[in-house]
Length: 377
Image (cartoon, rainbow, N blue to C red):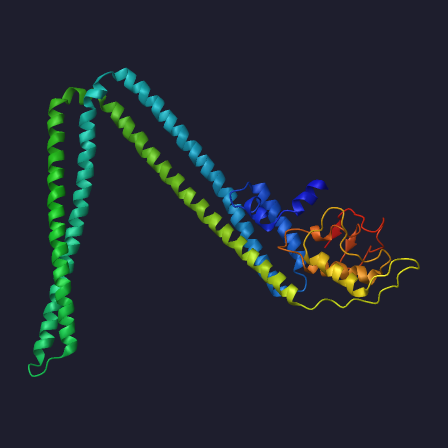
């Protein structure tokens, strides 16, 4: 009971920072969703449109939570597999290297030169594509200039401003395309020279280190195989990480929407007029009389002021109030619940209280006493 009472005293910011975070464990996420669903049903009575919207957002929250749990399991498995393959590849390569000896270090410059030559070849292909694109844009711009010149020269007696503007625009495009074409041509020539130099170095090393290259070939072929496998698993891990990030984003959006709906519900509830109270019994003979206005305001203030302090009751209403007054007070308190995350406001009510009025009875104990919180909403 103490743990539940302490949990109900948490502020909305604390709940959001701890149990509501998408990074929290799955069990805490699920328990918070169930707690929010039950408290929402208690505070959203009579607000059907907002309650439907809240139920829809709760479904989104559940779906995002399930997806986060599922994808995180897949991500853990993928990371474990990646680490296992990495360790296995390192062990096999070390074993292979110990068998082959020093020929691996002798042949390493050749394979490094082959890698650089392959990268230079890829850069050359990209530069060639950029140059071809720039040439196409230049040709299209020249065609636009030709069409604009024909339109300007169509009527020699009158200068059409539309054709003149089109000609100026096409001329600017030609100049920009010409600059891009020249830039692409220079870049293509540069990377082509680098590629040729890399190919020449590969051929020179191949002639010099022919024997070491032949002996170390199994090692570098095995290394290339493991590198390809590791790249595939790394891409899978990256994809799963993106899926987890997207699911957590949807979780946060649904949670933020739920908070907005909760604020709208409570803003609407606070804007409604208070429920009219029924006739009250007169004070017992010899008891200290209090005005009715003070008693009513005490009940409302106890409901709006959040959770009461330890040792305090909800209001100064006498212990002999009628069942109708207790029911209306309970409904008033339930309608002013803050943030739909706690029923601490109802802590001072009697055990087994409910909104339908069943089980409502006079308070036990003296004035200002405390009762155990057992509320059925």
